[in-house]
Picture 1 (cartoon, one colour):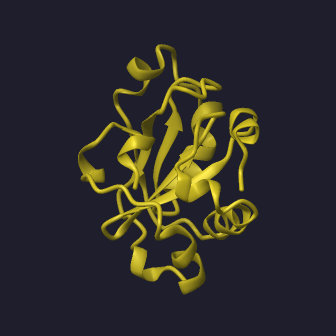
Picture 2: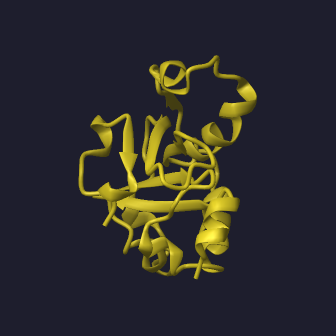
Amino acid sequence: MFTDIQQQTLDIDWFFINDNKIGFVASGGGKLPNSVTNLDEKIGVISSYFRNLPDKSKVIINNKLEEIKGSTITENYLSDFVYMAKRGLYVFDKSSLNNFSDLNYHLVVKPESPLELEKLPSDIFQMINKTIYTGNIEQIDSITINDIQ
């Protein structure tokens, strides 16, 4: 189980499902949903699975990103997020880095051709299927962990 100290000091990759789509979130020292805190070492297995998928999609960068971040967006900032979106994931980042009490994440980039949940191996599906966003991922620029079941 991830402790509050670990959550505050680590940038933990976590994942959620939305209908037949998958979201990827970089925690940036933020509080994790309860369903994610219980994954502990399994989070590395999940992350490794997605990171080792081949490119499958072109990506769409959030056109409000500079406004959200309040600064110029660099290629260095985008590189890992684009990498994950090319695998078909909707990608979010912590809006206020290292602010544990702030529960907000913003959309960085999304895939043109999303990876379908039904294409996942059953072991990966079983690890992420308890972390669910019930809104419409196609229509959002941000989420909070309160939006995650």
